[in-house]
Structures are given as C-alpha cells and as structure tokens.
Length: 381
Ligand SMILES: [Zn+2]
Image (cartoon, rainbow, N blue to C red; front, side, top):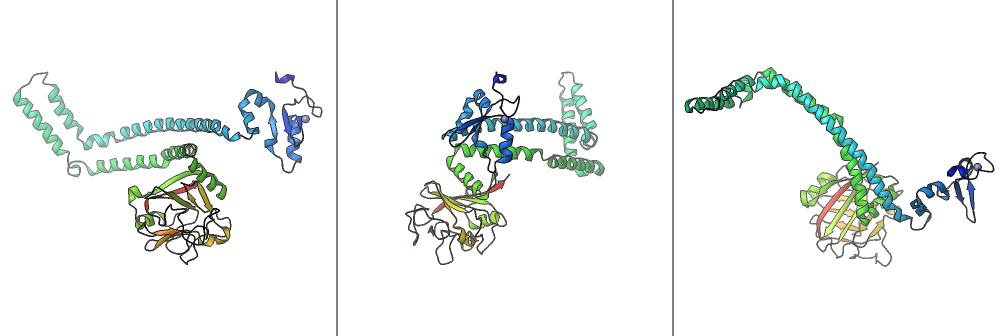
C-alpha cells in the first residue's frame, strides 16, 4: 500500500513518507529531502522528523511526539530487557557447551594418572570378588572381602606414600592447565557483566530514587553507568572506619549510602580517588553531590568550592564539604553516632534551609546516628 504514496516533486520516484515538523507548519518530504536537511541544517533535529509509515505500522511510536513520552519508557524497558536477556541466554548456552568440553577434556586426560593413583586395578579385583559371590553369603569370605576393601581404602588415603610422584605431578599440571583455561576464557565474567547491566536497568526501573541517582550521575559525568558494584556492606563487614578504610583507599567513583537510627537515608557520590587525610576535588566539572532519599533531593556541589569535596581519616572523621572551621556539609565521626550536617557550605542547600548553622535537614536529627552503611563503586560503559 505504501507504493501508492505520492512521489516527491523534487526527487523522482521517491515516495513522500516523512513529515518535517516546523514551527508554523509541516512539510511532506522523501528520503532524499531528509538527507539534504541533514547536510544543510546546522542544528538538525531528528525529533522533528516523523516517519509516517512507521507510525501507521506502530501507532505507539506517536507517543514520542506527545508531552507524555515518559510513559513509553515502559515499552522501551520491556523491550531492552527482552533483548538483553536473549543475549544472556545465548551466552549461558555457549558456556554450558564449553563446560561440557572442559569436563570431558579433564576426564579424558586425567584417566591414566588418575587410575594409577587410585590403584584402580586393585579396587577392581576386590570388586570382582564381591561379584563372584553370586548372591551367596558366606561369612568368612565376606569378612575377607571387607578386610580387602578396608586395606585398599587405607592404602590410598595418604597419596604421596603410595602413588608415583610422576603421576601426582601430571595430575596437578593437568588441573592447573584446565583451571587456567576456564579463567582465561572469561566466559563467566562476560555473563556476570551482562547480568549486572540487566540488574541495574531493573533496579532503575523498579526504584524511582535509584533512577534519580543514576540519571544524576550519568548527566553530571556525561557517561553511561554500566554497573554499580557493591564494595562494602556494614552488615557484613562491620560498621567501623577501619573496615571502610580497607575498601575505599585507592578507589574512585564511590556512591555512599547511610541509614540512621531514625530511618533517615542519605548519601553522597564523588568521582575522586580516596586517600587518607587531605581534601580532594576539583573546581570545574565536579559531578559530586549529596542526597537525601527521604526527601528525594539532590544537593550538587558548588563548583568553585569543589576543592573541598571529600576527606577521610580513619582516626578522625569522614567529611563531605567544609573549609576546616567545623563547617562541613556532612561530618561523620568514627563512632558513626556523632557528627553533624550543615548544607550550603560546599554542597548546595535547598531553598529555606538555614546554611549558617547545623541543621536536621539532611540527617533528620542533629547527629548522624548512622546504623548502616553501604558503598558502591560506579563503573561506566
Ligand atoms: Zn524529495
């Protein structure tokens, strides 16, 4: 039916299947007209071109020309997840075949050494005695066989006393060879990475606050996040500065979550490498921010104060912002209970918050009273 569309007056035999939306009117155009537009318009806006045929076939695509286009995120999400899961399925199928190969290679190559080591001949001859009994039960013979088996299993218990050194060594080399093959293939890692991406997309979808955090990071850093890797959970590693120090020193792009005893959740993202003592940060393109989950708010860094983004000393305190005169935007002491918050020094305070003194805005109380902490490393595509 599309063959019946009118031809372009300027480009012969090209159908007018596209619509160029302009400020005051619209114009039917063909594929060649579109190419001309792309070539000649300095700020060509692809969102102003409607593929009429596509919308006729897939009416839901008309959503993108409405002001409720966010609603199409669901369509996109379902489709993306489907595609990504298909890729994972394929990768898992490949890995299953590979595992089968590694397994049979191992069984095949270890046969001789393995049989020597476990003295298979001896086992077999004992077993043959058992089979030869033809369902009869003669007490003395059974006792003999029991003893033989006992002696057999006793004799193979301590390997380096019975097996030839050469056999043991061959076996070890073989195990080493196959282990290296498995690790080197990175087939497991590939699947984990793919799953991480699906997980992240799902978390963003199912948890609006995560979506806000991830979108803020992506917009500020101007890169796509591919993974949020948990590197610390206080519930597992203990809520101590020492445990935190063990995981953060030398790492960058960390996203921190704190939960207080009154269920206030807040945190921070900074891209800078953590070291012991001394402020880090930059006064340009600094993407850092503090956030409150309870209030659904982001407090971006004030760019010209960016030198004071973060500070850590495991004997003293964890600081975000501040110029050294007890004026940090967030300070947590090693007991996790004490500290304070005063937004607006280095991180932007929302309207109405008094920035001249400590406040309960971020912490829900005058002190942090942190009872839980989690740290994630953000990894980009
Ligand atoms: Zn044309």
